[in-house]
Length: 23
Image 1 (tube, one colour):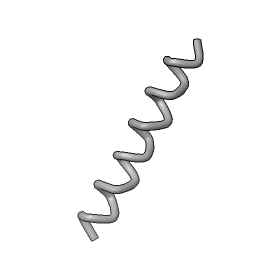
Image 2 (tube, one colour):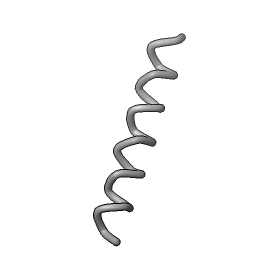
Image 3 (tube, helix red, strand yellow):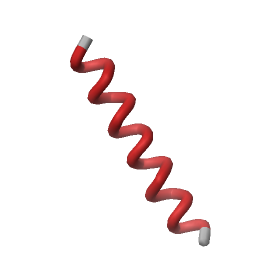
């Protein structure tokens, strides 16, 4: 489902932001 794909993308974005913040 497209919705699931959006959720995964949101998670990836969140993880990326956390990584940048950690640095």
